[in-house]
Length: 213
Image: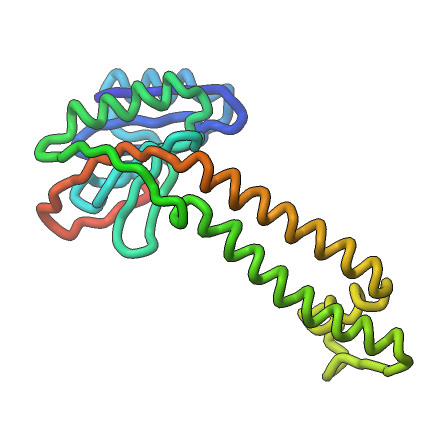
């Protein structure tokens, strides 16, 4: 049994490793010490800790610049162990690396496009909305009248109409700022591609994680 406890606001308060399972939980601050004591005395797993068996975890990733350790399961399925302190996060990862049997450790660097994928997608989404909104704004300026089908003003069309009504110059200013932010974020991430440390775990069965109640 190995237990890590934290009272930092953004952290998972309890992280533990026992019985080939990684546990995490967020008891009340006043209950943290008693949960740690119960775990260390091997009285069983306290109520409310989520357990993730190694047999279900495919990878454990530690990415440079991230404030968590990522557990990867099947396709598009993951869980984060939130640890804001860099040294503590590294210590926990190193413990996993040394104590998970049959695991394989590797280091790789993301490509420029992998690093900048999210802000680039955001840029193109904003660009499409910009084109649509600008078209409507020019129409309003020319005297055209627009309405939203079904009077659904909380829909995307309703939001576009509302923004377009502030005028062409303001539309350009708003969307220009958003696109500039996305581009700055893209180039910043491309310039400094992240290094990821990975622990690959050999699967032995199809167990799933559970929430201990």
